[in-house]
Image (cartoon, rainbow, N blue to C red; front, side, top):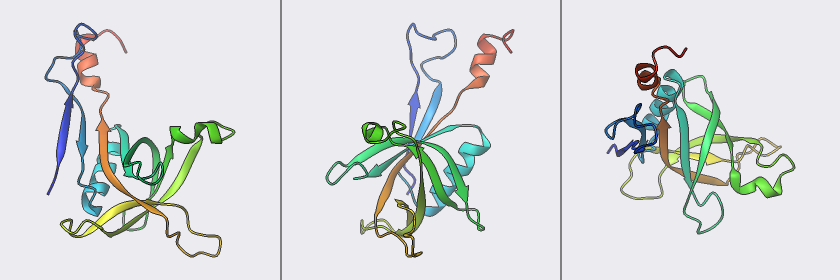
Length: 161
């Protein structure tokens, strides 16, 4: 079950010479199954797109989905996302570098939602010092890819390099 939303950029009159009301700049999926999750990451890196994500209760118990931005990822030997790098703006006040980049592990496991079959992506703290996996994990609830739409900018301003 693939669930994709496409966002249309419409700034009237902002950037109206570049974007029409039908130009899609971002798309979102709430299908964070292992297969879809990895496909979307690979496509984002392949096509130079920004990656946004939401994780359930990441900001604390009963906080629901919390949105953040991916800055990078590491892949395992099978080509699956193994680690993500992101910045959490919610912890800006608690950190000396004001929400510095963090590295978290990605694990794949069965969903706690009965109707979701197969393995899904979860964001997890790094393994403990003794090598045991951290029991703390949060389900990725969505991925959003944002395209720069360089094609539209180039068409609107062909002389700008």
